[in-house]
Image (cartoon, rainbow, N blue to C red; front, top):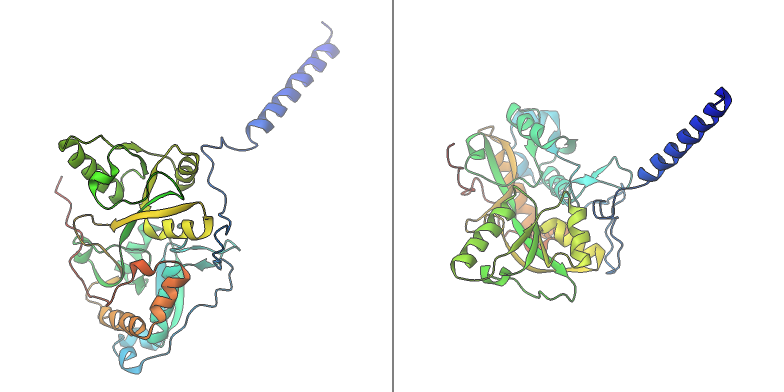
Length: 328
């Protein structure tokens, strides 16, 4: 074989490999792809632009006076939040830069009542706790559940009920979930290592002990995978955080919430603003939250994100949290 012919064959092989590589990289398998941004088929309009026009509150002198002097002198409330989570909690706007969501909105109300400028600091979940503990951030607003272990290092002012939701297809075979026996025999998707998985497993154990059919528990890599499986009928239900389920229902128009339970299962669980323990700020945070709860602005914010079902009637300081994990 001549050298020129070998070169031509090599070029043909390389071209074929390049074409195959382009096809392979064109996109993931549909079952593994993240779900596309939900369309507002239900007619719900959710502002995900950088221009949020947030609900605002007025300064209340008596409450602002409770803020530690060092923070008052600075004039800002430094708030840590993850900023990269799922809507509607704390996520990026359409510009992929601005942090928006129910958590920043409530933080804004609190800063307003305290007469401070909101300084929002997006960070990782792990760094959020370290930065609050070190005093780098005054407070964390990031869907943080009160636990007894966390109360060793932090003070908490509650502002939402920690809720998880069963989400099913609109018009599907499952219409209501109220108790463990309601899930017997169903195929349900849930995230591994989550509170909702623990609750579902406990419910399944109760059902099995009572002679009821077992739950077929399914796990996927991400939320988009759950929704693809739910819409295709491979799942009867998806059990996940109520905020993201409510947002998906409001904007997607293809699913509905058929039941909710407290995120702690048999134990009350609350979402709270988190600040460094004994730094004298938690009283002002709770008072500011109670101010906006009373005047209605708090519910305006929850309504923006379809979360009124998680409203609290009053902000509590350091309520009982989720129990400590067993040693070992």
